[in-house]
Image 1 (cartoon, helix red, strand yellow):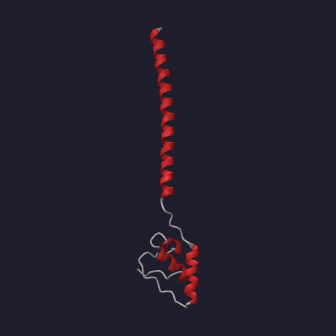
Image 2 (cartoon, helix red, strand yellow):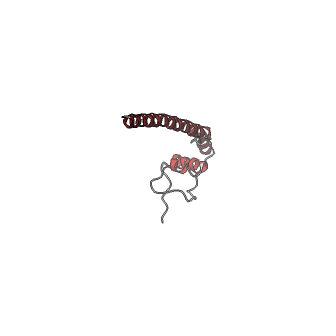
Length: 111
């Protein structure tokens, strides 16, 4: 009888300990997620800055500046100007101006 009681007590203690650890682990995961979120929010955001691009395009059109053909290495088949933003804001801006001026994207490289 004592063995049965001890066995039941051990099971109850084990289950309650696992519940406490599970809650503690869940709280720990939430805390870690909040720290990660805060770290992401603290980093500067590299935005498209459409107002600066539009001002650049307007000024270049006013001065009748013809955009150059793309000279970089990042332009790929299926890309849009937004894809260039990961490489360089200047390439993104120039692509937007090229598209505005010519009404099409850069020609694709011939590999």
